[in-house]
Length: 394
Ligand SMILES: Cc1ncc(COP(=O)(O)O)c(C=O)c1O
Image (cartoon, rainbow, N blue to C red; front, side, top):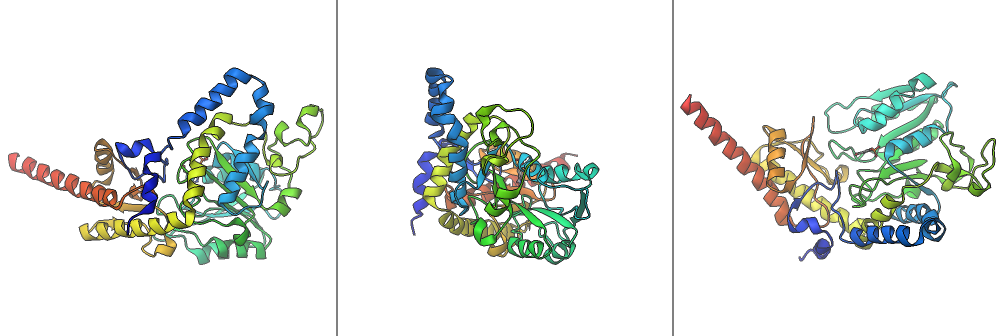
């Protein structure tokens, strides 16, 4: 069957020269980012300060709604920020850790920046409870559910784990959290754009992530969905003039909060990054995450099959329903292998306790998947021969 998604390859210049297998780190840049940034410079150069009124002021809301559409969020429920860590800070600032309900529960497969943020909230009263993985690949759901109790305030977890690509059981975690009155902050950085996310079906309280990986949106834009009923009530203490009901009143004294999503924003928005991310969002929405997921399951299964054939350790779930878009493979000397792959224009990365992470996206061919693994086999063979030669000459 011809792969209709390959039709989009011409939209991504880097695919002409590289085997691009690293969309879990930085998605390929769409060609249309060039005109988008040119238009940004043009409006600044020619319209000057009027650019705010004519385009820039509304841009955050428009991009928020484009992101919201990808996760089935209602309109005006997604605010935009610079990164996921900032999103955690906005959420944290809506709560108080001085009472009995001050427990923060997550697993140690969380993204480190998120954990660093929550650890740093201890002096404010947050009690962090971290559930440990047994195998370095999966999260022990039952133990995580047991840890969520009536003193739990927030459960900030990853939907798809960055290290192993394991898909957390978000539904079960959210249900348990709601049963005891806690809120879940679901980090969909490693899922949205590759694995379907429906914030309304999940009934999640907060959902955040960034656009630079699977959404091909470049660095500098993150999103924060807040469940609309909560959004109307919460009052972030990390706030600023964009969150004021009437920013241009320039009033003194306490703020009067705007309606969501502006309510969850703070200072002046990151216009160039917002402009640059739109072509990626447009392509992902056109391709459709359902189709991306189907292809991803096929190519990740192929990566696992090839790794097994070579006898390398796979640090990613084998069950496709538990596996996101990445396959982490730990072959001998995996860090050196990943460096050699980069030198050969096969773009991957390496992470401790994971190995080489291969992350094909909708624009990758099956031949590229096979070629990446064949290159690893060649690198290891050359290394073995070299070591043998060295032993002989000693
Ligand atoms: C699951 C996950 N969360 C968060 C981040 C990054 O956080 P931030 O946007 O704060 O840099 C990453 C990777 O960069 C990630 O994989």
